[in-house]
Every structure is written in C-alpha cells, then in structure tokens.
Image 1 (tube, rainbow, N blue to C red):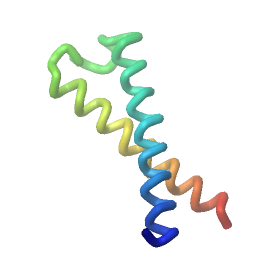
Image 2 (image 1 turned 120 degrees about the horizontal axis):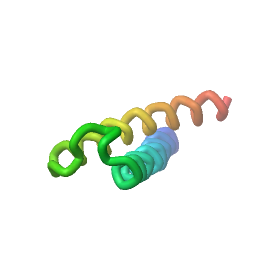
Image 3 (image 1 turned 90 degrees about the vertical axis):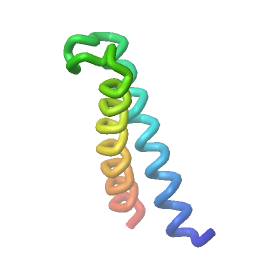
Length: 67
C-alpha cells in the first residue's frame, strides 16, 4: 500500500473511532440531549455524524502537523 494511502486510512479510522466513542458517550450519558436515540437508526446516524466529522478533522490536523 502506498504510504500516503496508508497515512490517510489510518488517520481517518483513528478520527472516526474517537468521534464514534464520543457519540456513544453522549448517548449513554444524556440520551435526551441528542434527540431520540432509543430508535436504533437514530443512534447509528448520530454515531456516524460525529464520527465522520472527527475523522475529517483528525486527518486535516494530522496532515498540517506532518509538514
């Protein structure tokens, strides 16, 4: 695997896992503050929403720190 692809994939996975864990903590800590996560699809979409934002932010930060 080319080094740049490996760099991007690992940083995206790390960022998504941080965001996903943050979403799970929000859902378990204060379920009413994030809508109605008792519906399974709503919980998955909340995790995906925060995970994708954290993934792109982590990738952008990692790329700027690499230079």
